[in-house]
Amino acid sequence: MTIFFIWVVAFALIAYFANKRWESGVSQGLDKVLPEVLKSHGDNRYLWVAALAVLGATTLIRPVDVLLVAILLAVIGLIIVKLANWASSMAH
Image (cartoon, rainbow, N blue to C red):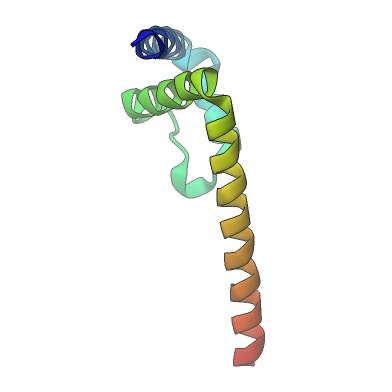
């Protein structure tokens, strides 16, 4: 139960500060990192603030889990890219 309360406090603080600094840097920083399809351009403020707060709080509480998920997604992405390259070479 203690972990849950720490997560909620971290979530609330990250959400508060991300919302407070949305116009002065969070939105622009997010747009630099994301591909064109996902760029916020200042819209969907509360959706992105909530997503950042969930990711930030989870990373603070369970960093190894987040690291393992990132590694797993990278491996899956690499396999998909390799399969797509192989399939496109077979098509020609």
